[in-house]
Image (cartoon, rainbow, N blue to C red; front, side, top):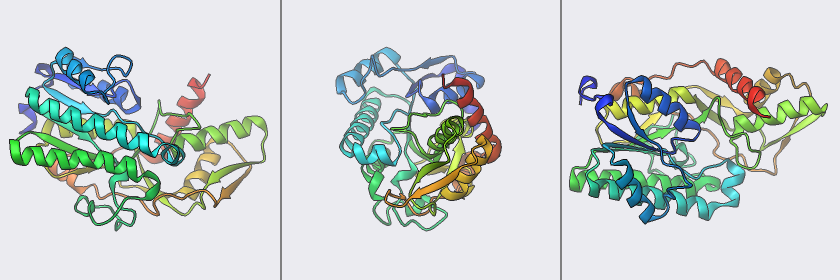
Length: 316
């Protein structure tokens, strides 16, 4: 399918998780492309873990395209506290939604996976063909495997039914509107909040999980939204595709950068009793460029500054 064959103005789009962090940025992107009919289900009305709620959603939305962003997510701490919930909720949402979308004749299903699906010791940079060479990092394996089953289902339904479902693998997101709740946030918003509050309280140190040695790749949320929109528009194949920035940074360097940018001058105390998570995480993003012309554009430090500014302006 060429780009000019996909007309957003003529499609009814359902974006699960559309009221969330990534979802709000994706909705803005789709509207800029001319999308007129976008259905955004809320968890209060549609509990997507429940089969009957999915049936009702599809009846109400009557979509041509589903972009499935909705997920039960969190950082290492939340994954360790709720492994069963993260597995069950994400598995049941995805499996039932994709199946009913196929049964109903929804034209296209865009499944959003997670970098947590990759094996713990994947060679860097992570290539999509290495998804099955080992078991995921233990602290987030239940979540990662539940989302990875969407890839298996997507490929199986294309193979047996010719169903047009695609699977995207975004790396860790950050940006304005991120989740800054200390019990469930990921590393960038957690460090921003800790640093800002420690500076305001006059604390002489903050505690950071792990030893600082792991590396991570992050993608600015508007870049991720652009990648998903382009894939929805242009990509119609079974192979999974990484959505990343191609920029890798150690947690130690990240923490020091955020402390400097927020003006916190105290000590960073590393709590090595807490898990590091995956040793390294960085993606090969060449398939996204080749298949649908996506390359992330946001400079990491500029993206961080925008995220810090948003937190300072909105935390009250």
